[in-house]
Image (cartoon, rainbow, N blue to C red):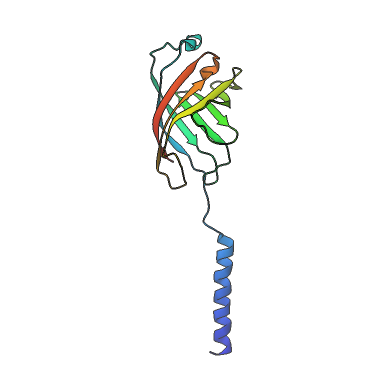
Length: 163
């Protein structure tokens, strides 16, 4: 191989190496699931926010499991209907079968944090182990302090698709 050929091969190799370094590893991404959930099973304490036991309604949901893809270590779930949304965040870890305190707030014509202590738990999470390649999840859970009413417990369930 002549000197010019070796220089050309080295230049090509250097170009490929530079491309690989600039591109870096495959990019991670935020992993989020979206879909509809049904709220039902309201406790008598929900009358404080005009929700009667036996009521049932659908809301849109967004769920970010912790430590999957680029997600941080918090569990985040939010529910939306028309011109209103409520969100819940467990700072670290995963919601399980025991109630855990969560940060909760809502946005309508303004944004505010709930004054009532709010607790949440999952009664169903399938699959139980979520990865960046999971296509859908089925969730079920309960929220104590729903709609900022300390005595209100609401149940929800639905299947969400990866977005």
